[in-house]
Image 1: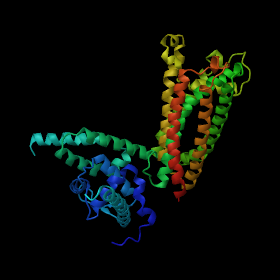
Image 2: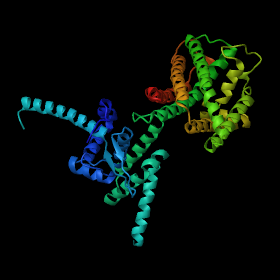
Image 3: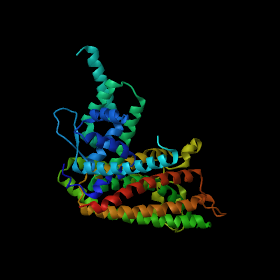
Image 4: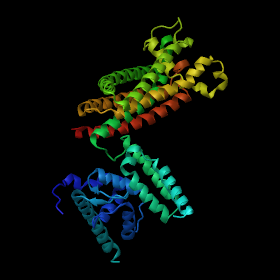
Length: 118
Length: 333
């Protein structure tokens, strides 16, 4: 998907989410393979991350992502409104996960050197 | 659908309605329906969970704080500045209710004799200067905002008319009542008083308008010697203050202000925060000051310490709102 609209500032914007950075990362990761509504997001995140986001936390993170343009709501015929990732959201998720992978690699490397491989 | 199932569904929808009330109206208008669907699905899966309820309550209160410009979740710049300024004004109104009560006590004491303690004199001078600055800043902000409100009401904006009328009524009650009672205590206007730091009329007006902030509430026996009319004023004047602040806040939230006016008001909000910090510093220097001159009306008591604490909390809220306003100001179109 083209991401010409995303700026570097937007791409790093998960940092500004404070304690909602974790739930926001899970939501973006869940939406990375297609649009989902609130309950489907909860079930998907529970399945791939083993974490059940409580409704208040889920919607606080959703509203922050929505207001920053990282996700967008789709039209729906019923009351359940699905959300999808935007180009800016995809770039923000990619940058955030790359940062997390760097941290994980450093941590695992140091563990292996000091404590031996698992 | 069977009767028990329909009853259970109605009960679940009532629960959802109760939980949604923790959120502000604007949030409910945007997310209410889909959030209700999620909650109904959650209830079907797990009927009862106090953790879930606590999470919803906390998130609802957080959403309310966000609408007041008090969280890191920033609103669009126009809303962030406007709501932040409204919150700052409300917090400063609470701050000044207690601050003016404190200053009126010191200023009234100064009508009779100048304080011999450096902390009382320095504190009174600092608070007087700060409250003067706040009055000027308030006036500078009120002129364009009031003008725009009057124009909007003149164009038959009914959403502004009722809070405007209520603000006018509460303001009239507050000013009229304070003017009526300002010399009902000999200390605020006796013939032996000389000119102090603050004009006697102003000090007396400040004393009467904040008469409800009093340690007499803790001494029912002493309260009994007050005339009934004065007691009624002590009990009813806080409602006039709350009504005035709430209705003005409603007008300011509903008013459509231009980016230029908001930018101007945002600058004044920063200046008002600085003046309030100065006021609190003066109040603290008096309350925590020591010395042989801290006697009579210049002697700080437990109530003054409690007032100082409330003022510090109100100022913390005002400063948090000011931070949001300052961050959003450059993004105003």
